[in-house]
Image 1 (cartoon, rainbow, N blue to C red):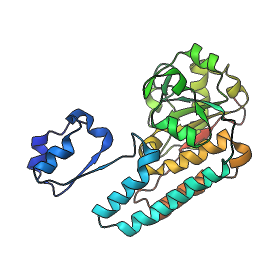
Image 2 (image 1 turned 45 degrees about the vertical axis):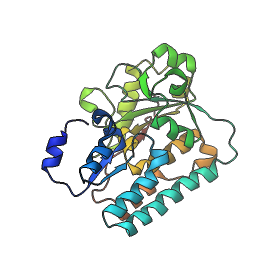
Image 3 (image 1 turned 90 degrees about the vertical axis):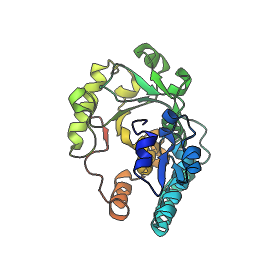
Length: 267
């Protein structure tokens, strides 16, 4: 994030630098070339800027440089198979429901939203259309309540995380599903979004924001596909996928609610 100086990095005498594509900006983007010229090999990986394009290659690179190629290959097969399952279900889809992704919902003034960045590509892969891409010329930004209501999204998706203390939707370790659902309803009411037909019809959900920055975003793709196209993808099972990730690949299991629906009583 720019907090590590080149001098401090060199003082550590690294044998290899693994750089995130998103972190290169503060260094002018030429950090790999500069370090390579100093005799320090560099690899660049990406799970954030364009995860739909770069996740599989990035995992293969990590497996190669860490001597864990077999494990990386197994993950690639698991991840690729999960993506293909979604793609097969959505083959021939011509109607893409309009989706509003309310980023960090409740934790910031209404309404932060992804524009044409990573979240938009995930929504598109899952068979939806991100209305933020129509309203924002950048990767992220703010849209007004009036713009959201006028756009009339078919599906509302809020993102949450460790934000309960600042009014957001708590999701992640230690969070019970019921608590996440109640918080989702409260944030929608507080944001004055309960007027949306999507919310009134129960098509309002929350998802862990951290899926935007991890290969585990396969779980989010399945959830989005289920919400966008329940007729085609209703039997996809994000919970089973997360259980397999925990069992087969994660040294620290993902625990707690990572997505939520509205409470059974609605808004």
